[in-house]
Image 1 (spheres, rainbow, N blue to C red):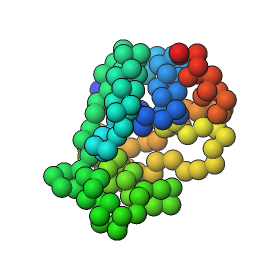
Image 2 (image 1 turned 90 degrees about the vertical axis):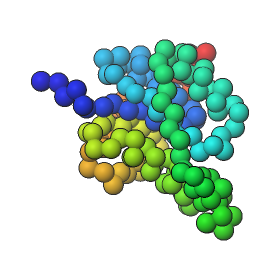
Image 3 (image 1 turned 45 degrees about the vertical axis):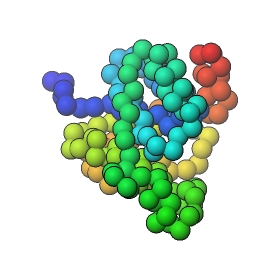
Amino acid sequence: MVNSKLRHILLLSGGKDSTALALYMRDIYPEINLEYVFTDTHKELKETYEYLARIEAYLGKEITKLQSGMGDRGFDHYLKLYNGFLPSAQMRWCTKNLKIRPFENYIGDIHSYLYIGIRADEHREGYISTKSNLTPIYPFKEDGIVKEDVIRILENSG
C-alpha cells in the first residue's frame, strides 16, 4: 500500500547543484512526485527571484516558497545577534536559522525524503536533521554525478 503522507522534497537554493538536481530528478526519475521548496531569507538578490520563476516554468511545477524568520527574527536580527559576522562555511547561522528551521517547521511530523544535491566528488556532510521523520537522499552521490556532469546537465537544459 502506498503511504499518501510520504513526501519527496527537493530544496532549491538558487545554486547550480540544486538546480541541476531538480532537472536530473525530473528527467531520470519522473515517477517520483517531487515537491520543490525554496526558503526565502528576504535578503536574496533580485536574480534569485528571476531564477525561481525560470526554473518553475522549466519544471512545469510550482515551487513552494517558505518565509524564514518571524517578525524581527529575519536576517538582520541574526546578523546583529552574531555581532555583524556574516554567514560562512564555518559560521552557518543563516542556514541553520533562516533555512533549516523554517523547512523543518514546514515538514512537521510527516515522513519525508529530502533530495540533496551533493555531488559524488564532494567530501562533505549534507543536511543532518534533528527530526527522525526526515530521510536524506543523495542522488548525485549514489549515481556518481560529479561537477562536470552538473555543468553538462545545466548546459543541456539551456
